[in-house]
Length: 313
Length: 63
Image (tube, rainbow over all chains, first blue to last red; front, side):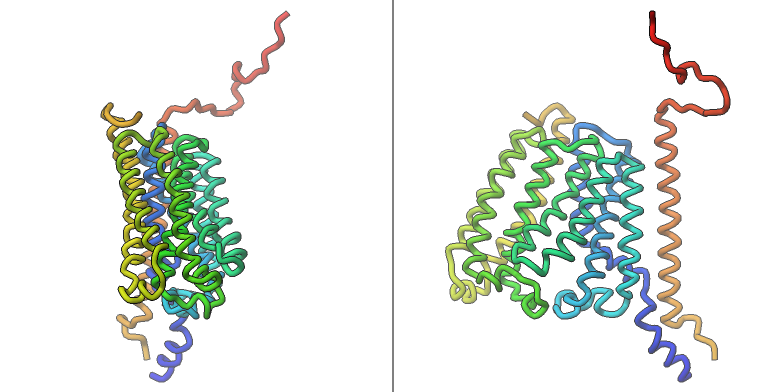
């Protein structure tokens, strides 16, 4: 009996279930990747065979999951320090760091090669660059170096709709670039609003967050500035072949609302925010999720309307 | 003393093996489906089976 106990004690951290490996791939991030990549692929002027489209979305999501696993491998030390991430598979000891590296590298290779075979080499190249950007440029290099880490990391999250578009068309166009720019410009206000009310332990982990390095007042200004810069990108996208009258109406409404929220965040100080328990910041953060979802949903609806001869410019 | 068959260790190993098995089966099915789609699309196929193919012979310059 004591042998069993000893066996359990020595092997328990290495005996991960399948779900632990799935957690390595950050499934919640993958769901956003699936949605935006699917929209990018469906609104493109060229249509793929359903099996090719399914494979494209699957391997784009798998590539995103692979970069998530590589990120968990590299960031295991800071994940262990922060309460929000301490239960992830690597810091909690359910999966070995080396396993995360191996899975990340293997899935990166499989997803890139398979996307290239299923669609085209440009899409596969973009996926490879996205994984490299997230794992190396963001996670290894800039995340612990600059408080603009969120801005840079946002680029990795912005690539999926562009890859979806390129998987269908074979080339990058203004529409694909604007879908990229929309997520890229949206990420900073989204995350900094979160940082304002989630007083996290980034400081303990040694990750420079804008709220810590530049102060909360400066973060509020950054939220407003990035939201102002986001508006022309969103309106510009609605004026391309992605949009039409319906999309433009949705875009103008969402951006007006978003701007008001950013202005309210900028126009108040910490004392007021603490008094109402960061109600404005929390509302802005919740709305930011809806903001991105509804923009991409609008592109999809516009494409559907176009197919019935109604939407578009 | 043998492990009881329902030991947690077995469950986790089984979940891993089952998950990996199903993932591999799904991967094989997807590669097969992709192959069928790409072959059926009718892109011109050539079998290089020691038969002279006139279209593959370089054209001589006219004149």
